[in-house]
Image (cartoon, rainbow, N blue to C red; front, side, top):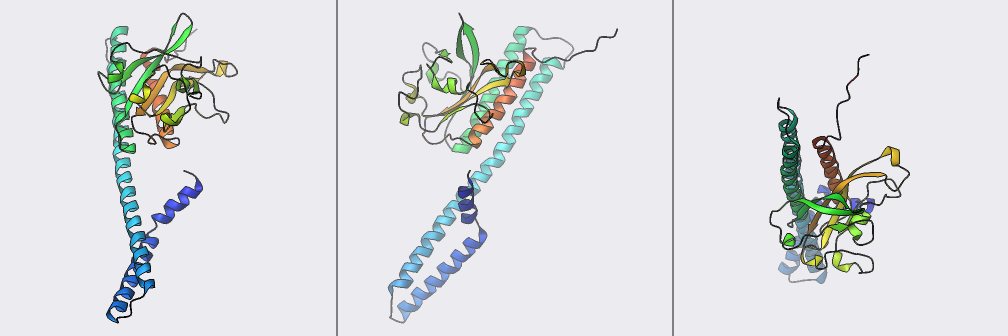
Length: 291
């Protein structure tokens, strides 16, 4: 939110403005009643009363909207807490017992956990934008030297877009703009991402997608990488230790936007990276060797 927008919001939600609007409405109404009773009706009281009522109603509606958003934000905080508890319980199950789990069991545990996480992320964004969302984790895989983004888990089972032949999205070739942009470093050093509030308005020359009928399933989307920066390769095109992508989309337009929508998803992708690194043995405890 820029400073101008914040100033307008602060002004619109100010209790002093609400108080002055009520006083103006009552004063204008009293003036109008007085003119009617004195049989000297004028245009100014009627106009001022109408304007005061309109402003009062607009402020009331806006205040109710802000109140609803604040209520949803409190619920979102609870969901974030539950997401953390899911990670804690799954990690405890994987590494807290006396018996070591097999690789197959760990992978199944990881998949089950991330499915639950995707469901909660979808719930968070559905509360934020008041529309149903689909959240997907795509893994980075290589096939004959070609890098692909392959669907790992979604927030919904038996998703309609998965019916028939699944699509493995080729990345870093120009075939899929969203994944390509989510891999490109930002000039200011911030986390890369792709975000479009209305995919139907993007020119075909500026947006590529291997799913030909993608607007049937989503019209607004955000894609962020599940990654960390590789210090050793910081100056090369392989600067990212990329595991995959965290994606969210909705069929409604102008719902998912840049700003905190992207920041939240980036933070959630960071959690996913750490969890998957633990589950897959990338993170380990270094033990000192006594000599």
